[in-house]
Length: 88
Image (cartoon, rainbow, N blue to C red):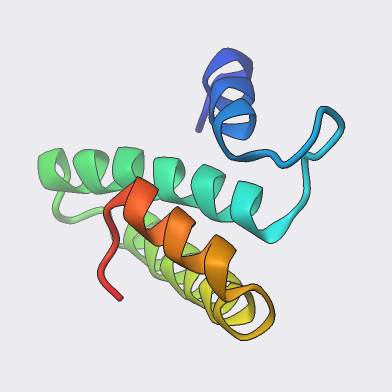
């Protein structure tokens, strides 16, 4: 779970304007941060299957947002992928 401070920092890095908190690029950034933290948790707790399921759902959700960005806004997609260091 992300703290308010961490989440607001991630939102600030990916937002397009001051009030932007829900665009696809912001949501991809927040999901990526949550995925990273959950992956660390699962390395320490390999038998935690409930969290593993949540991780898979988050990865799927992020993939859907990225597909949307790739289709609707290709420039934004390339910027987000490059910034987060994701595979294409």
